[in-house]
Amino acid sequence: MPSVRQVTGWLTARPDRLTDVDSHRLADILERSPALNALQGHVRGFAELMTERRGHELPEWMSDVDATGSPALQSFTTGLRRDLDAVTAGLTLEHNSGPVEGHVNRIKMLKRQMYGRANLDLLRKRVIHLE
Image (cartoon, rainbow, N blue to C red; front, side):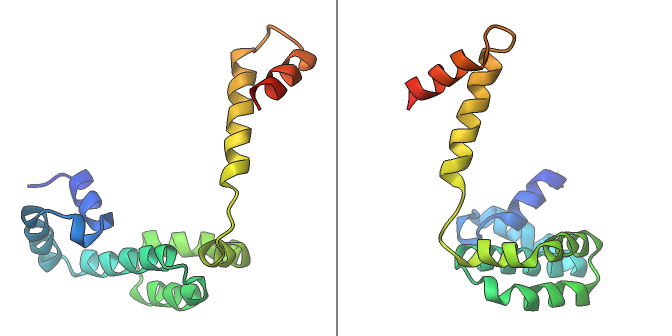
């Protein structure tokens, strides 16, 4: 019997990256659980929305999720609806905040290294020196 972690990994993995053994084991599990089979369809559908940048299809995907009655995914869609415009833009546009997040992460690392040892002037010099 596979673990919950294994099944979760199979559900979220790209189907073409699963081994034949894992594909058959997943198929057996999905055959025994219609709810899990529906969940897999929604997870894969959302993955396609993300990878193919089809954010304009998000409301339709959320309606499908709501129709199935999956509590975990309904909670997820509720969170998406809180800022639907930003989520849609994130799934559609090529722009992202990755570079900014990298700089913030680097500055936080420097700040942690220097905790209690120096003031803002030294932190400023270290940040500028690393650039």
